[in-house]
Image 1 (cartoon, rainbow, N blue to C red):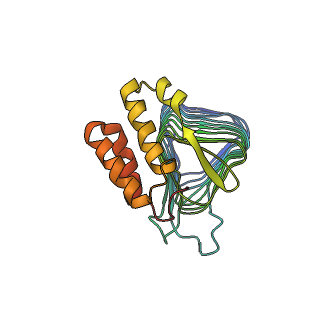
Image 2 (spheres, rainbow, N blue to C red):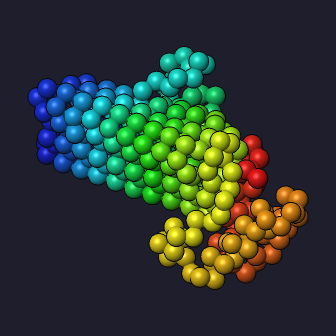
Length: 262
């Protein structure tokens, strides 16, 4: 079903069964699979391929040569009917690739709202991306990776499968991540190591001075005190009692399966 207000270039192919919402713009030489739903106001500039089952929300901009919703590269994949779900107001730049999930996980790759994916970024099967994240050029996720809200991945960074990147974390360019990166942390290197708190990012997002100081104390307990991880967690719990923002560390520790960078 194609809404009457949608604008579709005559060179593009929209398979029967696709749902194209109001005010959608599809430029030249795009391909949209039958199992695709595109929400109101989204724009495919040109030469974009969208395969399904894929659901794309409202007001996204997808640039040329992006491949959205393709079969994943997991060798266990046998063509199962898995999904890619993309939220609203994302910018997906040239040659970005996003793959559907696998039945070995939840069967869904999820992308939130208001994210920027720069040229050639890759989101693999079963990844979960939060909101307002930035993926710089060539940032690459393996399968089953989780990225928290407001995280920034530097250019050429690569994330090992099943790793978690915490909210407001920032990875420097060329980082190779093989363990989980806690929230608020700046990290860089091969292998990725912590080197401070993302203070400027927190200021820009409206964190109060007292909150930032508490987060810095939690960071010092974790990385600069010489404490074991269990003892550092106990110190962070004390900070969390008076500063709710610090609780993000504790919930992150509970979800970590690969251990955190140290």
